[in-house]
Length: 383
Image 1 (spheres, rainbow, N blue to C red):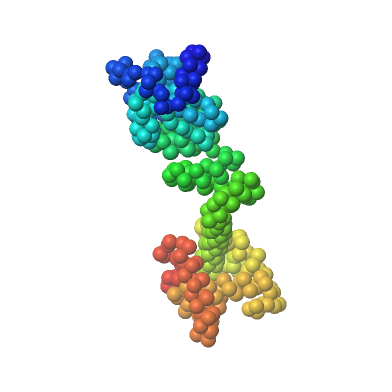
Image 2 (tube, rainbow, N blue to C red):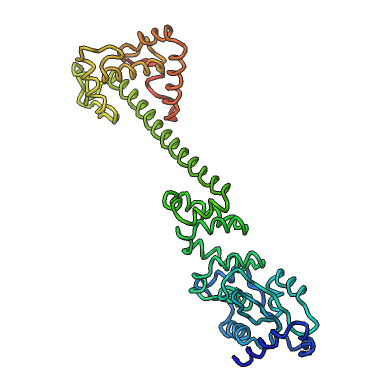
């Protein structure tokens, strides 16, 4: 085999002009029929690098590629290396290579094309895939980026899907994600670009200090800026989401506190009181979780000497709760919550700014619970 390749190489060196004088035209009946193109799932059925065709068929096409039997194409790669192949197989597997072969057609038997810019071994793995849709796992791990580029440049969608699958299921790492992201945008891999973008967002602090990031900043400054801006937007969105979640939790707690306040003042609570009320043996057990939290606040409010709005911090909280209740209570004349009626009358003297602020708070508090029959804003007839 080595002697045959040396002989063929020597003939190529003499120049393509003399090739037609050294070889006769190949008989079309002697050219092997190319293998069927793999279906959409063929490259993915065997996740470790084997196609769905039988072993015998795969070995036959691998042997045809390795032996170069009746090859009529010479592929030049980097470092002056050469790969021998068959025009009808390459042309069937890739329309781009088919066009290259038409342009490189000579009067003799041989065609010459060049695939440069990627390692010779990566080109060999690529050409082998065009023959049998096969590859080795180790080769895929080593040349995944080159194969991704070749699959796009030479329009081989089957290999493109295989490369994308392997990157999505283990080969995409923080070491190559910046390069994969740029390549995915360049080679029209929308899903892969989205996945790599998410990884960049997740590990931004780590990746922004790498050489790959510096290279992207120099070669694609606008892309680097867009990614950086998206990280800032995502961080602000996350903060806003957390703020709204915390606000919602506070509104819900205020709603529950007002429910418990009405429960204490109207029905009496075994946990808090009022202690001057004579509870019956069958008095219902308190089901309001907020009662326990209100107990210390109510006791402090009852005995504090600075019990004025804006004075003691704890009393201020109680005043705000009482005023919030008065704004949602629809039966102030009969309501037993202290100062409910007085605070409602005081609303008329508040400034428009304060009034707007309280209305917004009431809206948010009521919106935190989708309940239509709450005891603190419906008329109370049994007090």
